[in-house]
Amino acid sequence: MSYVDEVFDLVVEKNPAQPEFHQAVKEVLESLRVVIEANEEAYRRDALLERLVTPERQLLFRVPWVDDQGQVQVNNAFRVQFNSAIGPYKGGLRLHPSVNLGIIKFLGFEQIFKNSLTGLPIGGGKGGSDFDPKGKSDREVMAFCQSFMTELSKYIGADTDVPAGDIGTGAREIGYMYGQYKRIKGVYEGVLTGKGLSYGGSLARTEATGYGLLYLTAEMLKCNGHDISGKTVVISGSGNVAIYACQKAQQLGAKVVTVSDSTGWVYDPEGIDVALLKEVKEVKRARLTEYAAARSSAEYHEGRGVWGIKCDVALPCATQNELLIEDAKALVANGCLAVAEGANMPTTMEATEYLQANGVLFAPGKAANAGGVATSALEMSQNSERLSWTFEEVDSKLQNIMVNIFHNLDNAAKKYGMEGNYVAGANIAGFLKVAEAMTAQGIV
Ligand code: NDP
Image: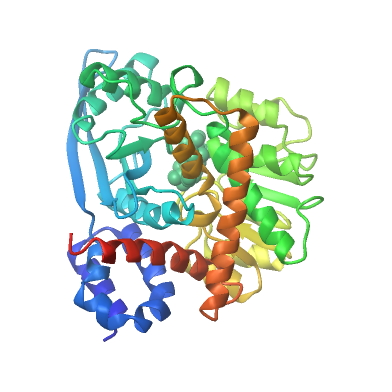
């Protein structure tokens, strides 16, 4: 049996009931096969793949907090410090009822390669809890965040592990967590990113993932003879990534006609009104029905459906495994040119393979949504320097990083004989740097 297959079997055996983690490992190892086989003896001797798929440290803890009725609630929480070969662990904190250890491990594993692709010195980690901030009062969210950070603060630090936001963890949650860290540790340091501008946050961090997604998508289209301007775009999600993807797509001259949330979706053939979307989602924290009620050109539909709308470019920006094989078939049938993942692993492997086999340009999340973590690393630099850069400075660095990422993965795919396969290119380019650092640092 080949080394890649052996290690994959080992992952399934040693990590039962973690299907998302298996899926992420399989996708990465499959596309690394040619690179691993070229250096199999040394990698086997050093157990490089076994070390790569096993987190350096996994923290599991309980988070007790008191709700507004005086009832004590208990949530499960996780921080997986996956790989620190090229820098301190870096990756977000997800707060969503679906969170479990397998989800956090899939996200942490992906984060290793994503962070490597940015070209910045950051290792891979991820964390979160099955706490649901939706429907909770501000006081309840604060009680949870303070209790969560009371435990997490023992294991993180500006030079060791620097968490950030993710689904359910926005500016409000980061603020409460940062306050508690500072209170416990008595130091004012850049231990979290995604902070508010008044206490060490970076301009353009809020916009970074969505903007970065569009910078990379525009470059991918350009290098394949297309222009983003004038294109029709469908987007899923209506959170941080989706909102700023929508805004940048429109600034680049494209028309975005859909957004969605966990209960339904909106089709707005006139183009999504970003100011209204922000009001509904960022200010009122309301459902998309409110968007449709306030805009006569918009139709609201229950359930899922954005991938059935005719488009040139599709940007899944909600959550994992939201673009399925039947969706991929609908996109191809409707003449879609490109899919770029704003979310982490939103496209199933089967759907990804179908899109690629049918000539759709496909940019995987670990490259396409790396603008968020790249700008987080820029926030860390500014905190270390005790300086704040302007919006334009950060945005222009972000743009350069995203264009470089695209060319890195394009070149890696070409070098290994898989031209146009950006999934393989991203995994290979991300892996080679980490593997070299791990090898240089010996058996640790
Ligand atoms: P938000 O919480 O701001 O928004 C998430 C959006 O996705 C919401 O519209 C939400 O709907 C929808 N959604 C969440 N879970 C589900 C589900 N199970 N089914 C259907 N819809 C769902 O998160 P972000 O925008 O920050 O993150 C979106 C994705 O992007 C995630 O995969 C995240 O890991 C990834 N990402 C985020 C980065 C960032 O900087 N924020 C960086 C890199 C990747 P509802 O409001 O109804 O829950």
